[in-house]
Amino acid sequence: METIHILNGPNLNLLGMRETNIYGHKTINDLEDMCRRRASENGFQVVFKQTNSESKLVDLIQEAIGKSSAIIINAAAYTHTSIAILDALKSFAGYVVEVHISDISKREEFRKFSFVSLRADLVIQGLGLDGYIEAIDKVVEKKVNK
Image (tube, rainbow, N blue to C red; front, top):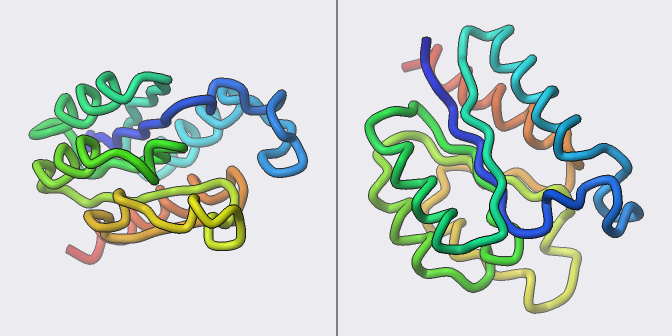
């Protein structure tokens, strides 16, 4: 069974509590369940991780090398600041989907630039948690069309 790594950055563990007007009321556990269900329906397994640490996020990306068909990543605030995460993603040969729950292009100026986008094969933003489901569907579609 093929694997998708779904990696989440800082403060996403606070989903359902933090800025619910932007991020909604579902929790990270709800998100993980949604992702596992959709991936399983399509013959994929999921490694689902969240960390508040930039270095741990780099480690998680490196752990996916050679083990995963795709990385779906919401680097959260590190999206806009981390060259280290970009460099780790550049070492991953599989498909990379960048996901943002909100539409970062319509938020504060400092959120509009993404280092992750420099490596991502696809960027999905502004769809809420459904953006992760869209990302899984795109990974499945990419694999089917290969």
